[in-house]
Length: 297
Image 1 (cartoon, one colour):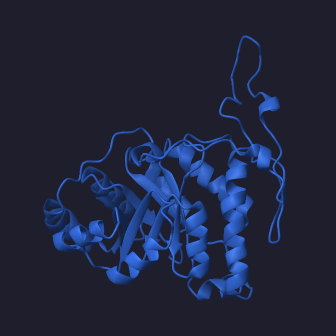
Image 2 (cartoon, rainbow, N blue to C red):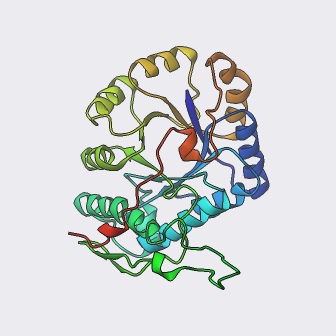
């Protein structure tokens, strides 16, 4: 049973470090961080990366406002700093105030779906613009970077235009693990085509119906419980029967401590799978190099 926890109401670095260390020591699989708070997700998780060693680190990402090239760099940096524990969660909605903060109108649903689809296609191509062995660091030959193994990504999409390789070498996982929040028809279609993890926030009967309509592409489906709610043993059994492999839980520190102290002991086997990276522990293959697909159709 996979468990991903999201700190709520915890926004100082010492408190977040303590939260993440308890999550890791308790054998939880990942710590997520949401948009809309006082701190930017990839920045927070990069700080947590150097104070933890096993737990996955999943940053919420919105396709509505941020340039995909910058997001690709931030996530690659998180994967490097954590030695292969980064994930990213494409969210289907944003807090309404974000549009005002960016000085723009929120994108209509159709445009937001196009942007999310291009994110899911473009970011992997940027990560693949470096071969795994592009940095031989060969002192004898005097070659640090093999420029023949760095390729330009040329993307001409409806929403984005990107020419050039990423400035960051390919990270330990190749691509950080992609999770998609499923909340509407466009996000269901995106998840069915691209997601490695899906999160579905609905009552279990509706969530199970949504999951059944995804076609089984994702390796792991998470039931996102309302903020502050912890799973019971009975709910865990019911969710597993419906095809869910775990939960995504938004918990403040008191509720999180009750999860660790009271709930985990009744959830059964919580051993974390072996593996050096987040991707390996999820049983996901290393992504194939897609750099040759750099020009959008």
